[in-house]
Image 1 (tube, one colour):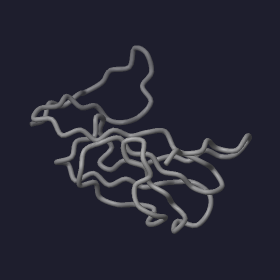
Image 2 (cartoon, helix red, strand yellow; image 1 turned 90 degrees about the vertical axis):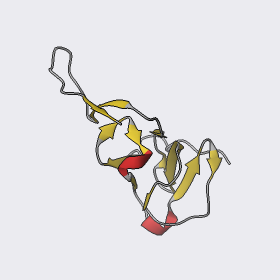
Image 3 (cartoon, helix red, strand yellow; image 1 turned 180 degrees about the horizontal axis):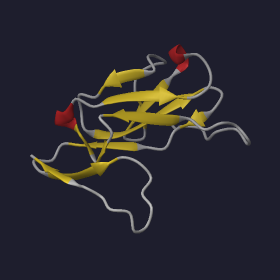
Length: 109
């Protein structure tokens, strides 16, 4: 159940997380979308390091906490995304931050 790396020089596979907050929390009804080359029906999902289901949809709403990855045939495996289920979390918008940039976190519970 391992996830192969992207072929050399290939575009990488990515996971889009909606809503775009990190950490992603289960009670936010998080949707994961696998982005990469190939047909969306050829997406393979992995949960907690193990193949999770057969080839299937490019997106779904998460119903269990854990660490997720997806694989597309032409572009390999995505980086992992963790979905937590804590009672209180401190979140920031999920994007690249630059040193010195101000950030507005939110506390949720």
